[in-house]
Length: 410
Image 1 (cartoon, rainbow, N blue to C red):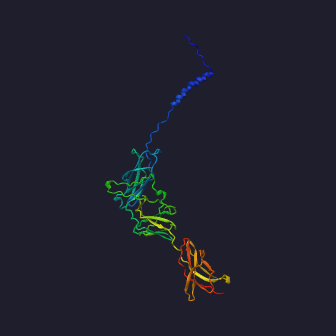
Image 2: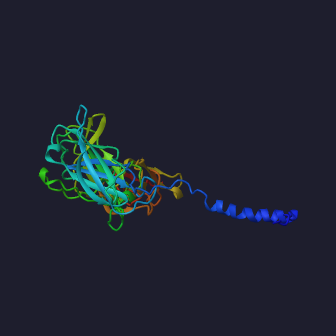
Image 3: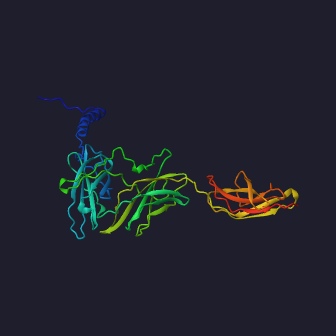
């Protein structure tokens, strides 16, 4: 059988057929492109805690950290989280004991606070370093690992400050307490009190909405009862801080039993609390053992303190003409920082030299400088003069010693 000869389509038709035949192949190849290696599912491991701190207050250890919000692969943590805390009593010679689990407790993302009531064997001498670590478990009981160590000290904590009291003085707030023979420092924490009588807490001390502050319950084998939760210690701040101030007395033995807060401002009201602080150096760490916080005392810094009494008052007749007759007074200037000026008082003196009659204040507003000219004196009359100092709060000093002078007739 003879087949008809094959004829080639025109060149334009050939190009169209070639494109039509190639298009399905390109589409097939695109549909079969490799999506890359499959991504493993997230393990949902909460990130490691980085900021654990431990603080010894009395026989309690306060632990604080930030429970992470993100996983190790930077995703939001899903499900409930549990913190496990462990403690090591660090020995002088390695190897150190294993980190003994203290407790497990539920936590939420954000600032977290827990406490341990130390067993009796860790609240007596000699002092020893304690190392704490925490790790966060996810809902399936998996963790990214332990936090770095946070150190505090075992040993006997100093006794609490007793009978704290405060008194306003011109030099500042005087704080006094019952002295002891200990050489520990006394630390005073000051917070301002608002006009409504409420203590103004710094933002760092307010309880976050998501924080968890459980008290660690000891195992029954330890025989220790859980201690009640105590308020967190104020954060360290300098004396120029507008909200909170921390002051420390020098280390002295015996305890001086008092100090003056020279930074307290007149017109303000403050609440003070105090702790004794014992510092020890253990294993290359400088650690503190703090007493329990004292009962608070409120000091209202109200300026009720008069200026110093003027001194060296002198009086001489002055004026060159009858129209300018006067008795001129001068005295030593007062050095009080809040001095507003001086008041001048005059009283008649009888022929026998006895001061008599009504005391008259000659100026209605304070004289700024230490001098005054009395142009209301009558010729032939003898007067007794005295001067007082007055401050910007209206407090007036005791009067100076009298000085007498007569305006002679011309």
